[in-house]
Length: 139
Image (cartoon, rainbow, N blue to C red; front, side):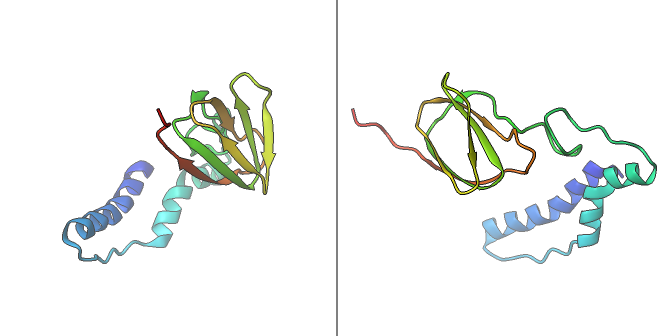
């Protein structure tokens, strides 16, 4: 059985229980082996390591299993965005201005409708809290 199929089956039970709770209001008991779930996630990298195979990562990522990321393409914001940096560095370029790096403890404000490109260009994992506030501008 493929890794993706195992992960899908593990998630299907939880999703079915949530759907049942939403539709009937009654909770469900889901019995999932934590070992099986963890082993499924580690399967590819663990198998490669045990067989002496070096795993190539996707460019722009530090993990072979994660989808490409680290930088969101430039796009206009659809709301006022506030981001509090908890760990790592957030790289942000607004419109055609110079790129700025925000670090742990800093609060970032991105106005609505501004072209922005943001991401993690540092070595450390980036953790942040994001709050989006959408409002209608007065006419």
